[in-house]
Length: 183
Image (cartoon, rainbow, N blue to C red):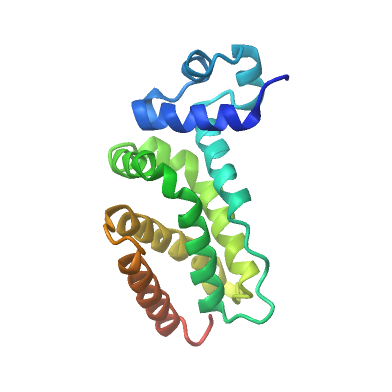
């Protein structure tokens, strides 16, 4: 494969913003980017893999080191804000995805394993207790909470995202109260 990976990612963001979830395809991405279809298919053959390519781009740029001296709350706050900062230039596309996911249960089913894997990883890096039955539930609860935070962020019109930060902080405190005996 001899193409600019960053250009492919940028083209995929443009495609998502223009056409939404149902417009994601390797063929459409190839046409928009000018990258040969065989190269696109080699990297992301399915619509879900295109969406995961975009998520991985944000994830790589927002990488937060495991919490050594931070509380679970502080690590999760920092990690989520890092992700939102990296996603800022793609806010229109992300808002479109969130709106379309409400009407696309198949996408939710396809993305659930990756979302739970990511949630578990972030919680592990935050040194959250993931043992026992509650430990199995926490990645799911955290994933749903992250969707809520994305919706708040998507609607936040403040320049400094103070609304998002306030709701994120409050939400994390509520999660701590709910799980104070096991978080």
